[in-house]
Amino acid sequence: QLYTQQKDSTRFPYLNRDIARIYSAKHKNDSALYYYQKANSLASQLGLRKHEILISSELGCFLYEINQPQKAKEYLLEIKTHSSQTSNALLQALDNIAKFYK
Image (cartoon, rainbow, N blue to C red; front, side, top):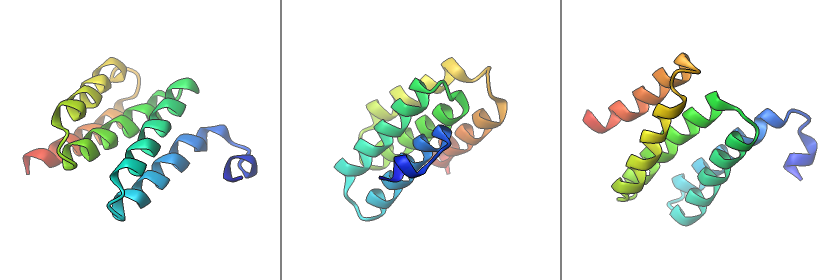
């Protein structure tokens, strides 16, 4: 229903990302992971590289937090393939990655 109310399809990835954040806050990791992955997939399908970079970095951080470092690494390395296209998104992604080293 939320999708049909939105006229701007570029919001779909962030809607799913926000749902993932809610589930993450409630420690419902399986549901959070599902919505993060859905958000990432939607961003990719819609060709929204900036969105995909930001969601991939957040998904990578989430996976690291739930003790899945290898999967986290895969998503964080995926960012490199899109990094030349969107410098601001890359900076945000790097900020997310830097959280691991604090």
